[in-house]
Amino acid sequence: MPHVMEVCTMALPVKATKTIDARGSFCPGPLMELIGYIRTAPVGEVIEVLSTDTGSRTDIPHWTQKAGHEFIGVESRGDHDAIIVRKTH
Image 1 (cartoon, rainbow, N blue to C red):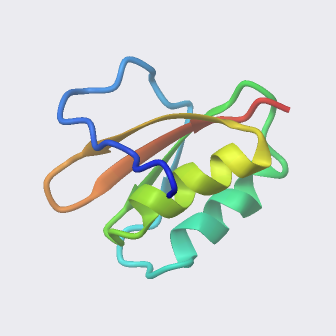
Image 2 (cartoon, helix red, strand yellow):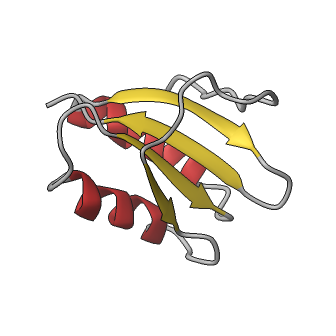
Image 3 (cartoon, helix red, strand yellow):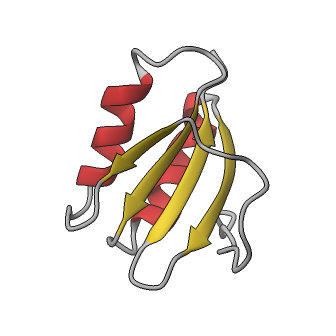
């Protein structure tokens, strides 16, 4: 059974250096926007994906782990989530 990612209700301790606003985009849009950006992002970049698509809160963390990047967390912000990842390679 896949590991279920928890949604954080408090502010995450890491500040993003790049925001991808994918609100209003449906699956797999937010993930595809992240993949497109992370290919050219510098190693160490902290990326925040804003998404209204509820599937993003599990799709993005699973892809991040599979791709070998660091999943930092998901923060619920009322009408959307902020999913935070760090590029590691």
